[in-house]
Image (cartoon, rainbow, N blue to C red; front, side, top):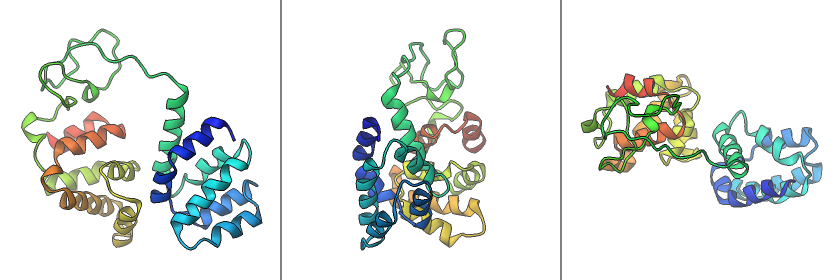
Length: 234
């Protein structure tokens, strides 16, 4: 395995042990691709808890050659796409230099990308204000809404708008994989109900700290389009 992939798996060891459920789909896929042997399967299955199974898998993978990291991330595609995305993003960040920071100015509360040099491709809601505002400017969302707790109407509308990225949003808000599993198990027939259950769980746990501003930060982190924010909060 490439040294940078070994380093990445080591740095994310506790995160993976907490979030990843090492089930038959993962280890059988890795066995099919000849990353794991029958002996490895027995070693993993013999562990008494999921956490120990995950740690055992992470111990084995670095010894399984240059294809191990690729096939490991591929094994996460169906049930743990947010974990796959995070690993690939961190891997890319390790090999690419970050883009230069935005240097234009935008007054706090403005809702359009003004005073930006021609050809700027940055999304408006990612621009930082330079006038007495410490939070990212949420273009199109009224300032007075940002510190408030989202209403049930807001949560319902957001649940209807979110697509496959909804799990990534809820994980960024602090929910665990077990929480997401519970939301899915309690609402097996409708994805919108699963998303809404997760959003409600987040607001109940965090109380007044579950603000629109905090929600927008997680939406921004998963590249939700500004038009979705405007549909929900404007």
